Image 1: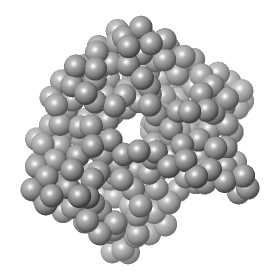
Image 2 (image 1 turned 180 degrees about the vertical axis):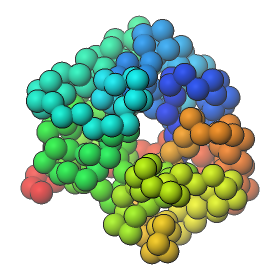
Image 3 (image 1 turned 45 degrees about the horizontal axis):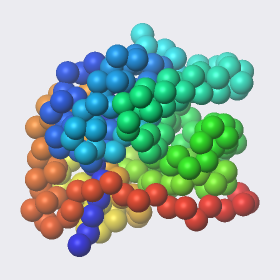
Length: 256
């Protein structure tokens, strides 16, 4: 049977966490950078434990006023310190709750920057690997995140986005551009089915992209997020696709 993981970014104050945790199989938990604090992290982890949902950390630029969606120029060590602080907070609470943090997924501008810039991504992922060599990275498939994760030896889970438009190069269309977010539920569901069954995503210009992604991100901060997530899961299950956390790849390489 074909299977795929459904993940959502949670703990961001959108009010949909409880409902989404009954739909998705993985939860990327904001850990104090763009959103979230110790209390929200604990609550989402407890809900993950109760619902049997895989938990991951979702660090980003420490910029809650702009929701971590703008790139900030700073010394790399300062940025790495911010990321390490977020991961340590999430891991401390996870240990207390009795839930494993299985993966890291970068948020917003930090995710986009690592998807585009290989050297930058290697620096970020090497720091994560030094903290926990067993933790996986949830990475945008066909991006520099994938190459960086392999280069530093981190387990890899390839991800695609249900409701974000893609460029012909396989990256996400900037939110500043029209059409960057797909609002039509039918189009989102059709995309998820095509990805799960054929390993394809259609870019904004019509280019058909091949994808090995086996985790689909369902955003919790878009209007109608819960209904859309429910519709995606129902359509996939009706097509015979099992919803379950995807096992990470561990075939690390030693050269770029």
